[in-house]
Length: 379
Ligand SMILES: Cc1cc2nc3c(=O)[nH]c(=O)nc-3n(C[C@H](O)[C@H](O)[C@H](O)COP(=O)(O)O)c2cc1C
Image (cartoon, rainbow, N blue to C red; front, side, top):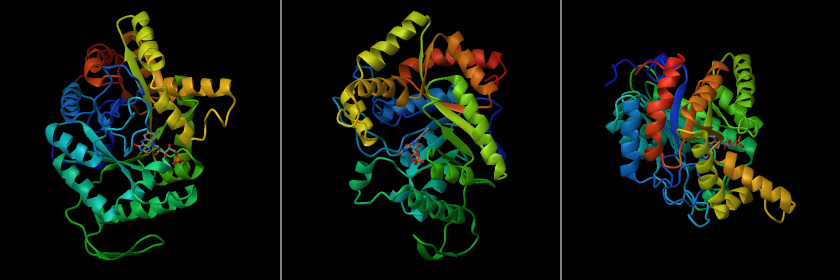
């Protein structure tokens, strides 16, 4: 197990010396980050998640990042129709692992901050300082509707989130009772014990992409996840983005680590990798689900010309959902990850079509190459 000391530095480093942190993204949701019909698509069952987490932990993977999702996107597979709630998922996995940091992804508008703060502390104690918080405000109206909660406009969404995170932090740090008289919360003699594990608090991440969302992230988070249209298309674009984010953070006197996301299809030969990517992600895409996701962004057959719609649909299936596709051999994928690291990217959360079947090749062939490059510590 970890040592009992949990400083903020230890947490930022995820308790290891890896320069490039690698995480697994989306394993709590059915089909993970691939809206595909292929029968081997990810189940997201608890037993598969547990096996994956133990395998990842033993391999020295740095973090597991779940998706906060409450409702499927429809299509033939009802993409993301089956999901495990992320904080309870994290608590279970933290109890079963020794080194990996596990995030909970929490929709601020759906959880009372004092209850949420205590759930995070509980998970953090279970994991001896390995719980991380991904705070999200939501972007999918239908999900909020089913809770009877009205989604706020962007300004107010993040204004609310600010009060929410301030209360969570107060619950983590205040040594006695505290009052909150805010615009959204009115709390009297609030009290929360115990505090997070060790002498620090859980890592906080956010992935806002609007101006107010980014500003919120700059003010509050340790790890900023970026996945822009540009970063989904090339490693170089991600590198440029990192410099911008770091500069924005520095203006506020904050040291922000930049992370990104990607989908890995790694095979022994390039031909095999290309073929599987085409088969699973394009030829067998769950187009109904992809179209449903695009409709949430007001991109439909009715709102844009047909050729543009089909191009956007293909782009979204191929790059949008999983992020930049790392498709190739262990050599080519390690080289691309090496470029990201040299560009200052602190970490990447990756997904696979079937995490359990595909992770072993990544572990056995890609991770050692990253160690040889000096960007991952020897396990
Ligand atoms: C890596 C990553 C993870 C995200 N995870 C979730 C999630 O689990 N649930 C969710 O509703 N939104 C999630 N989002 C969406 C963001 O929180 C955010 O709402 C989105 O980027 C739009 O930015 P905005 O809120 O500033 O408009 C994620 C985004 C990224 C890039």
